[in-house]
Image 1 (tube, helix red, strand yellow):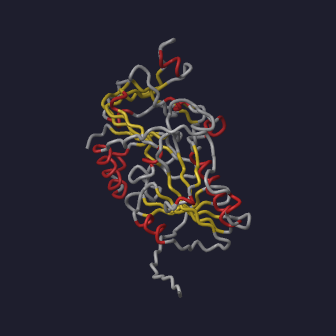
Image 2: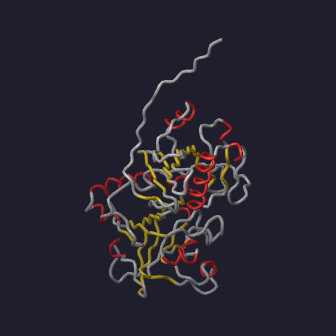
Image 3: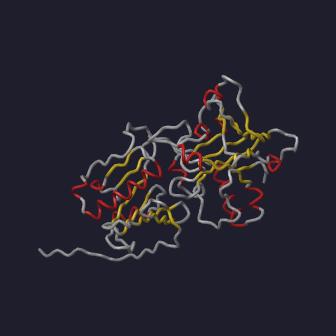
Length: 354
């Protein structure tokens, strides 16, 4: 395995093509993006004469450090190294590390580069620096839904030997130390090698923000309405979705469609609300059929304590490898849990006397 692989940890965005308030702004990624709702990596996937120029934060406190390109095979005297595989990783709102894309055959510089004045990359970044570059034809940006699938969505793991808060991570070195990380990393490299982007469906004009169409909220019970309200607020915070549509009367097997971007691909969410605190629910035959299909875009979302101020959410989804349960508190933050999916099939019948 080549040493020319690096993981770079940046803010989470949908498109990295500029700051678009209400639709695509930097999420997580350190103190600066959190306080300013902007980050220099906003333009990491913006076309500049068929190249991408990338930023990753190297400043910590008052010290601007460098990327250790010797770990990638460069000499001590080199200012940059070519032919690197950059795997970009980020954390969406609510938590959970994801691979958001990668650059093959990239150039990684030891230190920040300042583009020549009045050059396209300088104008784009308002004079701010970059530290990586690659030809667009060698780059992939995963769409938000694609990032939810294993191995692009990191599995539950121990903290040691896995990417943490540092902006730079050298996976080949760590894979020699941790067998669990090596197993995951080998799978990730295999998926990167064979990856084919999903065919983009025709874009539909949608108003930015949340709109609930179809079933009126007045036709829902207080419990159901409280659950839907919790779920929509969670997804609004996590993804800044293009739209959220209520399809509960269309017998699709789910209640909400969450459109993360301008395509017609959506998260399909079955919403279940409970007044008590035990996250145990029943599914109709149609709902259970959809659940069994294990589609990676499907979400079973249970909200407990719907009639109190201490609601908890449980987002259940299939990564392509295993069921994952995100427990979400009343502040819409994902908290650690050891829950497992326990399925008990029951037989039911309807008796009619004529």
